[in-house]
Image 1 (cartoon, rainbow, N blue to C red):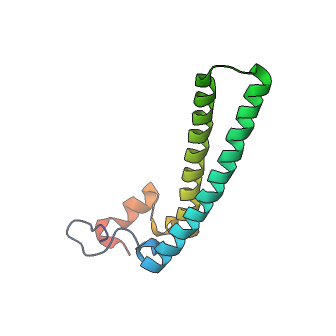
Image 2 (image 1 turned 90 degrees about the horizontal axis):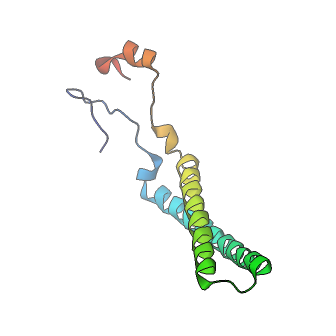
Length: 115
């Protein structure tokens, strides 16, 4: 349900293309595919980090390896998820559904004169 201005029946924002179940299913399927690729790259990065730590320190404390693996994994998966959501939002037209008028347009249009 779009937001409505007080006392007016005109929606504030256009409906998002993601409100269509078919578009949403396609977008989330694409997002899950991207996250599988990010997870595979993350696994390779963790392996590379472990090999690098081993080459520099040899057999060090297990805590060092656990902390490094968790740090690399968390940062790469979080970055991948946020970038994936950004691409999902932009690629589906969800961003275009938001109207962000400038202060001058806001003042000129007024609540009763929109659209």
